[in-house]
Picture 1: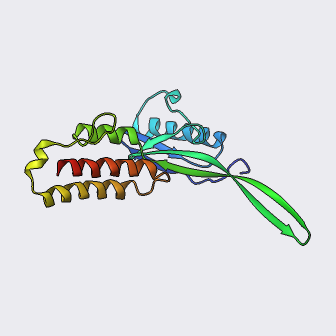
Picture 2: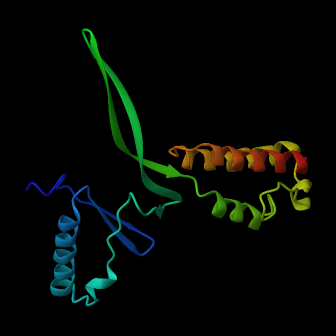
Amino acid sequence: LGLVEEPCMHYIRYQRKSILASKGTSLFMNKWKFYLVTFWQWHFSVWFHPRRISINQFSKHSLEIMGYLSNVQMNPSVVRSQILENSFLINNAIKKLDTLVPIIPLIAELAKAKFCNVLGHPISKPIRADLSDSNIIDRFARICRNISHYHSGSCKKKSLYRIKYILRLSCARTL
């Protein structure tokens, strides 16, 4: 039991991929991998090679899931403590899960919809110019709001602001 930090396992299924996550050690994860392979083979007659299941540490590999690029970063923090006359510094490294907005795929999708070019420079679309000004503004505002709500959990907002900038300038050029 001393080898297991957190015996809780988290299971995610997304786009025909299964992800099993835990704070446990590699020994713990290898045990779970063995149990799952055995379970699938005996109960569901699903035969595959166990080496096809890879175990990646979040601190070394990032993971793209549900429109986010997630990774774990070590963020050092310094705590100053003082007991009467003596003071000392404590350095702690805290693991923090960062969720980043995948800017390149989003710009590619905006370019496909003719909001910008492949480099992310906003452009106008003549077909949208046939709509009324209020209709154009409403459509751009809805798209911007949906992207903002979906990616609001991101730690790094700079790329989200870039997407908003592309949409606003494209809207202004269309008007």
